[in-house]
Image 1: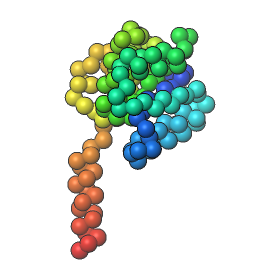
Image 2 (image 1 turned 180 degrees about the horizontal axis):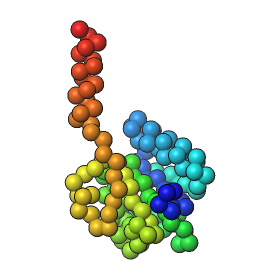
Image 3 (image 1 turned 60 degrees about the horizontal axis):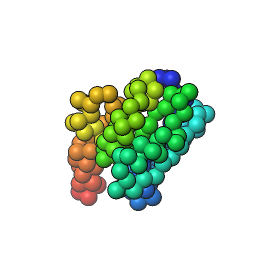
Length: 136
């Protein structure tokens, strides 16, 4: 909302199949609810095409409002990015793009994509260290 977004759309594969997706969906919903903003949660299949995502987004994006589209993982983020480019929307002035999994392509993407980096290797290393300490 600080960047002027009025509506928020979450695009995710089935959140009930993976705990990370479920937590991201719930965090998204909680955050947007606190802002008292309109939100949509769109569940897609793994094989949903960019064109289909573009159609889904078209039915949700209000031309009179600024919308942020949030993807729950890198693969979905790539599809959302392509879908928004297919629509030709003005990023970030009309539609913003944000997601998890900071893949290298996002560094060079035009228009820009905001990503949330998670240091999974470092997190795993730390968790393993804690586990070993507990066992010893």
